Amino acid sequence: MEDQGSTSESRHGKPYFKDMLQTIDESGGRRWIFPKRPKGRLYTFRWLVAILLLGFLFIAPFVSYNGEPFMLMNVLERKFIIFGQVFWPQDFHLLVLSIIALIIFIILFTVNFGRVFCGWACPQTIFMEFVFRQIEYLIEGDSNKQKKLDKQPWDLEKTFKKSLKHVVFFGMAFLITNVFLAYLIGGNRLGEVISSGPLANSGLFLAVFVFALAFYGAYAFFREQVCIIVCPYGRLQGVLLDEKSVVVAYDYKRGEPRATLKPNQNKLETDKGDCIDCHNCVAVCPTGIDIRNGTQLECINCTACIDACNQVMDRIKQPRGLVRYDSEKGISTGSKKFLNARSTAYSAFLFVLLSIISTLFIIRGDVEATVLRIPGSIYQEYGPGNYSNIYKIQLVNKANADMPISLSLISHEGEIKFIGNELTAQKGKVTEANFMVVISQELLTASNTPIQIGIFSDNKQIDVYKTNFLAPESLDK
Image (cartoon, rainbow, N blue to C red; front, side, top):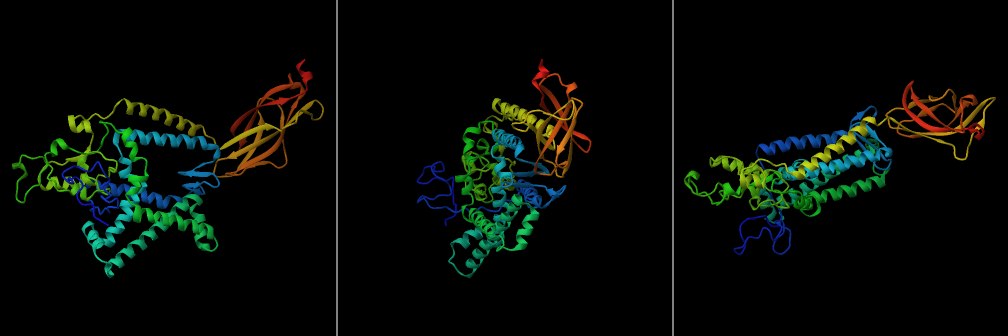
């Protein structure tokens, strides 16, 4: 493995950063990245965000709310619980609309603020920089020590540290995989699976082991290549970003011409730009790029270069912000306006979509009912002067508890009789029952009469269903 070395200097007198990835050497081999541990205000804020997100990830599937997991993504049973709210296949339209809204939100956010999501909230970045990278720093030390360890022969120290790192990496990957499994089957079920041992659930254990192995490989070896090669989001920058998009950017008007600052030299006495070409912004970059070359596909907007540059500016007594959040137009003209027609249109569409989703959530009931007449059945005489029709009711209980159900004819005077036991809608299940509607002949004036059936639970009306009641055609005369 080679270290990243210089990235903005020329090779053979020509700039080369646009011609090749910084993680690939001239022979096409992997150029290993050893980023220096960042320090600074933004890095501290990113730590706080990472702790919140990791805390939620590890705790949420094990928290119960009203007897159900707080978060559950049970794909096999098609049951989803998001923030304690149960969703069933009948709510698929809400899931689709929510995913569309999330995509629009990410696009809107990218148009205005670049890849802020990548640097601050993407799971790949959170796991890489605040879990696995921290383990690496702890075992192998900071950047220079990692480079030294990588170059030295396989002696006892290197063998021990490398082995320990990879054992801890796989242990962490296995732990995280089990947390993901808890999101699929629930925290309580995961506890039962673990306590019963791997032999009792050999298939599930093998699946978890294989997934953990892939997870370990992604963070032990593939690392930043996930962002550069696999993730399509970075490539969307080319069509989403414009000159008003706020990204992590280098102020070339202030920084150029760059020049190395000699020891004991006063920066104020030079006629050069503020950049002293110290390469600290490159040293901390997790993808090995030089932000001074402009917005690049590999940049995940992690802000490590901002913190590194600000520390240098403090030392040479220059204003902070040589590398900062800004737009190309902001740097070239000083303008702070970043909204344009495209971002305004995205915002309007997102607002409409969120309004629709909110309305659907508000009117979404705990029970979804379908009432159909039994196929092939017509009317029947039911005692002197009465007619009856037979219906089937199908109920989907989306609530977290069983619900006793009663029916009442609310459009006409009449009677509803269940065929069998009284109806109880079981939580999270589809319940079916047959019932009979009886109406007096005196109240019917046609062979096909619209009726309304009220659906009640604990004397509270939860839905009204409209259907038709059939009677002899002689009533039409």
